[in-house]
View: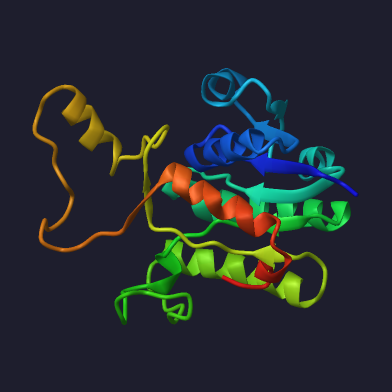
Length: 219
């Protein structure tokens, strides 16, 4: 039985956290990256770092061989989502299908649109009004359709905004940069409105879904 866990986007914040979690557990990990220099800075030495391009179907097939579980943690700047992310998702879905591997697809809350109830639970309507939210819903629907067809076992853990090691997006990075410099940190919203965040190493707990058969087919 295949035991290797393959992490796409392994040099990113969530991908690196997942690799750290898996290697700590002694799991065989194949960390797929495009930037080896960054990967060597953020990944543990025991990880098997391989260069792969998630936009290339053949490259994806090659790194997915003999995989037991695949984690799709690839992300690109927002303005490239429409052009890049559907193809990446399709490539990784195909790679998982051919390897007979299970697929963990960490998601976000964009697909919900404006919240209709709080707290927001898994059964919240997928009523996105933004282009990014509708795109996420389209990709998730494609994956769940594949699951329902029996092609690939898919699970979607859904997260709010990340903070923590290697999280360098425009929301979180300035807060910590200001704190390190002893300056006042700014927050891009009303201070009296709650905003959900998740520590990146806690989000890496989505690896638990990777080895929980009953989780597949669910959000």
